[in-house]
Image (cartoon, rainbow, N blue to C red):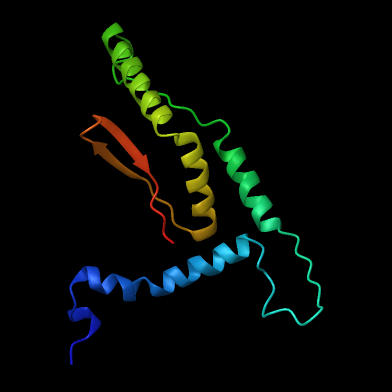
Amino acid sequence: MPTSLDLPRPQQLRTLDAERLRRYHEHLCFYAGDQWPGRSRRAERRLTFNYARAFVEKVTGYLLDSASIQVEADDARTLAGRDRARTAERALRTIESANGLAQLDFETEVDCAILGDGAFKVTWDAEASEVRVTAPDVQ
């Protein structure tokens, strides 16, 4: 009888990722304020102070508040080296602006704090001749 390990790797992922995706769901529920065990009884009032959400967003905002793009050239003593660094910095700022990276970075950092995983997907849009940066949605 074939086991799941006999399947091609893409088909194995669904089984291998089930536990991780279940934890993602639990963590997202907790972050959203669903922190009480079980269902509430009829006429039971539950009060939730969602410090988890407040803490994650405050720390993330603090962490990213001073984030900036800076490029230093290996040969910063030369005019050509400094010019290359400024050109690279401008290119990176253009990519940052075109992709809304400040917001994407904040959202991805929050996801990382909640889920324990974070990633960016960087691709080249050949039609537009531009770099595209997105974050995969694990849900």
